[in-house]
Length: 80
Image (cartoon, rainbow, N blue to C red; front, top):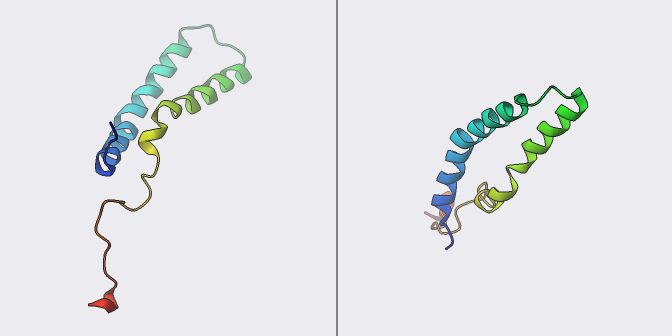
């Protein structure tokens, strides 16, 4: 089932405003459960987790910055 453009925009906003901060908090809590590794290993873990969340959500974010493909084209000012 394909999501409409408007639904994908709303879902993307919800993911960025609510889901991403929650993911960051969970990632920090999980990493803090282990003994503190060297700074390079910790940095690699955070970079990996920072990139990992994008892959399952790629289809939601694809094309969000573009104009709505289902919207009526707006006339130019000189065509009135």
